[in-house]
Length: 397
Image (tube, rainbow, N blue to C red):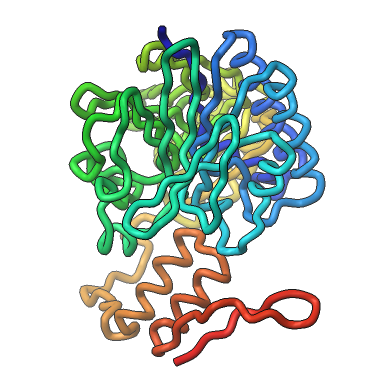
């Protein structure tokens, strides 16, 4: 008997993109459309491969939005299996995902400190670690769903996925990581060769564009984010160079419907992001592109030139009627003071300081950064100490 499921990732509920509150509402509505389409497709279950939330501490409104949308599949007896991404993972014992799990809205997969057993979950022990995995049965057939939350590169230096995740029968592996072969210019923690063998489907998240590759007999799939994240994730890019217009289409936004472990992309209509690049000599021709930019679009105009074009760019900008417009001027090298000497970061930062900066750029939580710093100075986390009103984390050297 075949299985049919939806694979979503990088939803980022609560993201007020460019400090615009209405964008958070649009992220929620797009998520709702995706869930409704999954229900219409009569899927057996739904996978969310990380970053359901933009923050590990979502606002009350964002939590309310999540409960509203996640209640839709629950009403149709469609279970959701989820992992935490780099944006919404936490070191706290009780997270927003745990709250949603207690409400029966999703099933959290991955390493756990306590055994969980339910209709859709079971806990196994491997290498003295408890791992919660999903189970979905249909007739006499069963699919096992493994996974873990986002882990940093440091974790993969000490651990192998294949030590913890070994498929049993028809199995799926959920991860929120960058893979070298699929995201070399974006950042990655592992390569295709690091993925354990013999899973029929690798349900990935973290990369915001859609990709499909293979690992043995299995499919390695990123559905991409549901909404456009920034202008690098454009719907269309125009370049005005040497008097000619060059057009490049971006990737579509959506998610996968997976049948017999073969993904099929389902497109979602989202707000367009249009990215225009032009050099100083062609700036007057920007006006010819006004009809190509719809009113609902977010628009970025990048000009290569010097400070003399800034006023002209602002004047031309007024001809575009886009919802949100960003302009930037990239100064030509002739207008900048040239220096042969390059800054050597090793002269300014110790190795550990560079590591902390790297982790901050990866959106590590304050708790994780603090733990990293304390461990560097010879402290380690002890067991939680009970105090009046709660527990206290005590670090000892």
